Length: 106
Image (cartoon, rainbow, N blue to C red; front, side, top):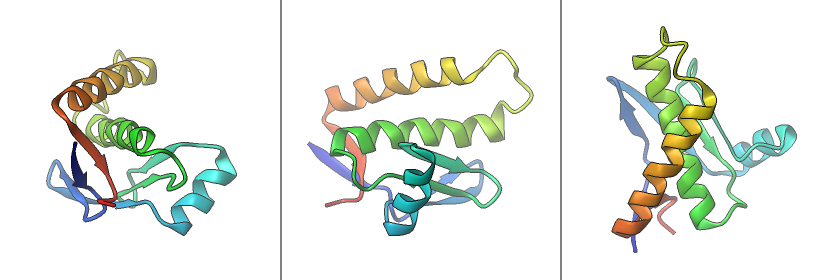
């Protein structure tokens, strides 16, 4: 399995998003009982550090898709959260099949 360390940040539409899987992200997400969160205003993707590697990878893809949606599809009401979730799970399955997993590089 190729492990891609996304905690160095990613670029989406010319914007740099920080990707956090640290204590602060854990506290923020645990309070809301979330796996992840995309803060588009502050350009931060948070992922729960306590989740398994495979869950962190799928959550990263989902939150990355949230960032892409915000930038490229903000005026598209037809692309709702359910569709975004379905597509992100599909992308995750393809990446796993290719032996690519996103996470903190550990």
